[in-house]
Length: 393
Image (tube, rainbow, N blue to C red; front, side, top):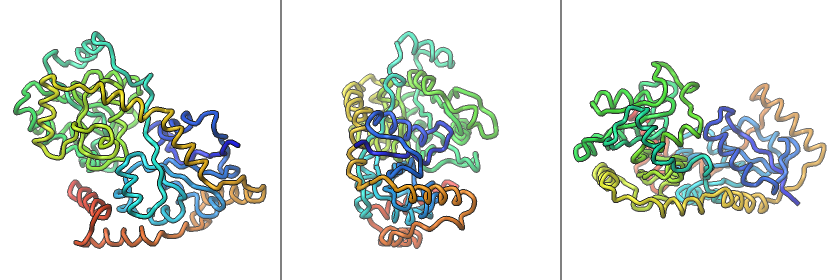
C-alpha cells in the first residue's frame, strides 16, 4: 500500500522551501498518495516553525517528518526548536554534517539529498556564454566570480546576513585580486544591498544583473531558474562564503551548470567539493588562482553530483523514510478532530496544544544561551553562529 502523505509548511513564494517540497513530490510521484492535512497519517513539513503553528491537537496521531533546511547548530539558537524536537518523529537531513549533529543531539534522523533539475541547470554553449557576458558588460579577459545568495538582512538591508558570509566574500575577492587583477564580481538575485555597498567601498569592480533599487527588491529580483542558469554560464568561478548552510543549492546548481565552484566547508558543499573547500583567505585565494590558471576540472565532481543527488536518489531515500514509519489511516472521528483543531489554531494560539519540550535539546539550548565556556561539538557551533549574528548587526 502506498503511503499517504501531506506536504506542508511551504512559503508560497517559489523560493527554497517551496522548491524542497516540489522536488520531494516529484521524486516520489506515483509511489505515494497525497492527501489533506486531516486525512493523511504522515505530515512532511518543509521546516519546523509551521508545525508549532499547527499545534499538538492538529498533529495528534500523525507521523511527522521534517526537512532540515539548516543544520541543527543553527536551530539551537532559535526559540521553539526544543518544542519541535519533542514532536517530530523523523528529521530529514540534507548533508552528512547535519546528520552528525542530529545524532549528537539524540534526535531521529535520516539522510535525503538535495536535488536540482538537470534540464534547467546545465552548461550553456560557448557562443551563448560569450553573448551573456557581453550583454552584462564583461570583457573577454575578465575573470568573473560571484554568487547569487541574499547577502543583506530582510529587516535592515544595510546589514549583512551573517549566514551567507558576504564579509568573507569581500575579504576573499580583495585578497585574490592581488594576484588576479582582472577579477570582477557578478551579483544577481534579491537583497544584494550590503555587498554592493561594500564592493564599492573597497573599489572592487562588480556588475549587477537585475534592478538595483534602494528599498527591498525581493519581488523584482527573484530570478527564474532558467535565467539563473544563464548567469552561472557567465561566471568563471562560483564563490560560496557561508558560515553555515543546509545546502546551499548553489553547490548543485554550479556543478550542473558546468562551472567551477569553491566553498567554505559547510553543509552539502562538504559532501561534494573535496579539495575545493577553503577555511581561510589564503586557501580561498589559492583555489581561485588555480581556477584562473586553467587548472580546474570539475567534470568528475559534476558526474558524481548527478548520480548522488539525483531525483531518483531523493525519491528512494524518502520512500525508505515513509515506509519505516508506523503510520495508519486516521479514523473519520480523528480526521474531523484534526481538521477542526487545524482550523481553530489559525484563529488564535490559545487553541493550539503545545508540543512539549525535548529535555536534551532544551538543556543544550540553555547552555548556548548562557554562553558557557565548556561548550563542545554542536553546542559550540551553535554558540559561534550566535556570535556571528551579533557581530554583523
